[in-house]
Image (spheres, helix red, strand yellow):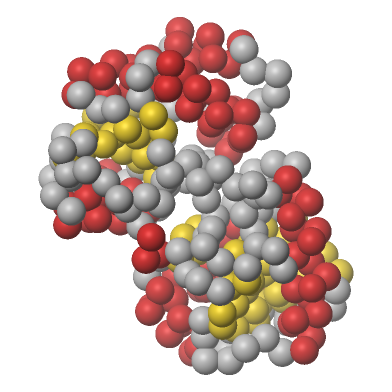
Length: 275
């Protein structure tokens, strides 16, 4: 539950995630300030109806100053920041430089965890990024009109434990399997790119896409996200099944996603984390 008197800060990356957070905040009559990442956020976020400040990826000190001056005490990260951007041309400010200097590793968990720590030291708590989007976290079950076939289930049984190990190492959250063999593993390129790569390697036939949350997933950031683009890429690349984690994967445009999957004969299942 949220208090309508609270003011939230939204750190907006790319994709639809930030827009859905804004829509939910408006429906609940919440006050919000948006910090849009210049290299990532859709320019249309400027018309969201809330104050929007455009920042470079490395402007952590500016982010804190804007939030504090605006009275923000709780922040939400929404939308992917492409991992490759971390090593891009954005010049970090002094606050970001100090944060980076204190990290022993530069992987995603360490970087975003470092940002969260600096925010908290400034009196701004980074909260569950799905706090306003509970309906977009599907429960366990088969979401499409058809369940997994026996061969797709075998791929899931084989690939899901492997995907968890890869996610635990903070390499990626998606693998693509065919005939109980790993065709492609996600790294910095993202889910859509790894599906397309798997289509080239797997001759566009009978691919099973497995997308997992990290073990002990920190719900404040880096949640797995699935949307229409995922299904379009799967259909184009010959993938016939998608497995996601129940309660830990954001599924946007659910009705449209399921309808598109049904049209292309793609099965989508949402499985409990323990399985």
